[in-house]
Image (cartoon, rainbow, N blue to C red; front, top):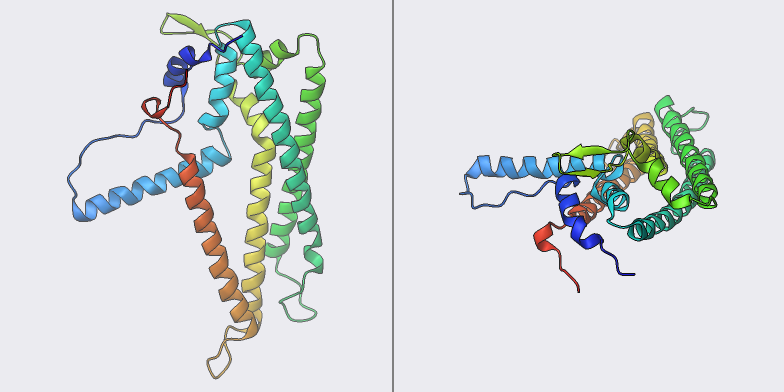
Length: 273
């Protein structure tokens, strides 16, 4: 049976999509004010990506659930629900594997070659960052396993697909929009729950990077940055190289993610027969 979601996708996404349409229009360049405005827009987009694309909800998370709750026929709703379930199970499996690998790396931090002098205890921020990252990685593994098991068990029910939709819908499930039609909207807390493994994993990676930076620069603070003749010490070279690579990786990562974060507008979509 052919899918009929294309017709209803446009009005639904127009009403509920979290992606704001970009303003278009010709603005005269105005030196400093134009540069400041562009810089502010880029910073706003970066913060929006960081806090909604990674840690919270964006259109790629919210809209598929909205569409599967409001497809025109039962067959279309079931098809979209099956698609969402299968992709969510694959996502949970991938996140669980990555979190387990990250937990292994964090567990082995105690055996890393020490940059600090012998018989020197690493400062508390370093130990705190690594232990916090390990805890978050374990939380990611546990939440991914828990959600995967729950989704598998729920899928074995006779009315599995309607139950999944009921679980994702906001309570009370039905609400009127403009007095014209009834639409079911995803429950915010429920959608956040399915995002927990990714959120924990991302926070764990951040903690590990912070701990590594603190470890590298703590060694410089203990032994000094340069020799008497002005040449860099070994730890100073390590700190400069590590910081340069870290900043480069972070900039390239965010630039790449920002290029993929833009969701096309309705006018940019290519319709297929």
